[in-house]
Image (cartoon, rainbow, N blue to C red; front, side):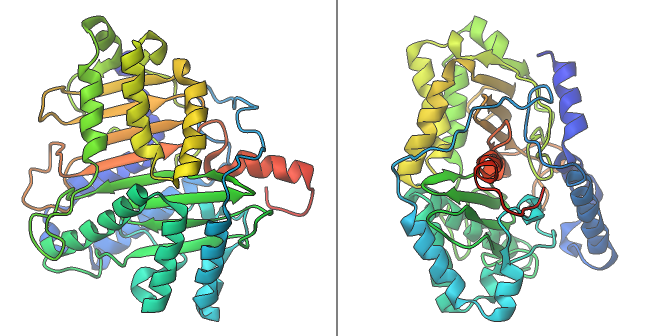
Length: 410
């Protein structure tokens, strides 16, 4: 895809890109913080973005506006979800009636789609900072049961780096902090009926749908600013380096003819992600080079890179998802924007009928000591989605309702 067409798609579909630009361009001094009228302005903008994003019924990410059917059949994976079910039940049992009333939603509630990376977004659920110590233990037990050791560690490290961000902003823990992440549960945890949970907060959003022994863990957003703590309580914490370095290694493993197809723009245009909040129905054409043109070794590199994202799921379900990815490997596209030098900033996209991954070096927003007009390796966004209607497990839920009719939302 040519640069003009590609950038036109991005300009027309990403609410979050425009919001990020407002933040980057409108906040001259973060020392003054988002407060008063300015904070209210951003909250209003986020509410407007939510209203626009949810104005249409859910369809899902498509390449041409039409959902490819038959990609996600209801089936047994052979991987038990009993630990997740048990952990969610234990967490809910710790909640007070007031907490439960704002934390539990119907499995088909629009609350699934109400997530946003920005820290000022108004969220539902029960946050870690308002939980008791016993509640926090059960909340982390739910994450531990649902995620791999890698996924749990990365999630916790992102939360810790949000504390670091508060330290770097005059110990501002009203806006930033490791406890400012909210849990909601959709439906009642069950070994048969569909249900799920959502974690929502700054630079960390996980949507986790469960039906029988099937799991869908998208949309998932993982990022950070900064990506490493060089001081403070969590000094030494670092995230998203494998995703960064393996992406760069893959583009540099391509020969000249392959790079000509994969690299669609050499200058990093800033904040290129298109699949962030309120982009559930984006129409996004394929771009870059098809994996069918890769050598066997390059295909394995691509699969290893995809695995960095998929393997945040519990190991058995990650294996199931990677099998799905392999079935569509030759259709998978890899696209690149930016430089390819060791210290370059860049964006890449991996896109197939069953997975969409974006990695993006972003411009600084809250790190006051960095130049705000250029992307930096200290601010990273990554997004994983399931195209063709199965984000939030929506296609599985649709099929479930067809097989087991009962009142539900549309």
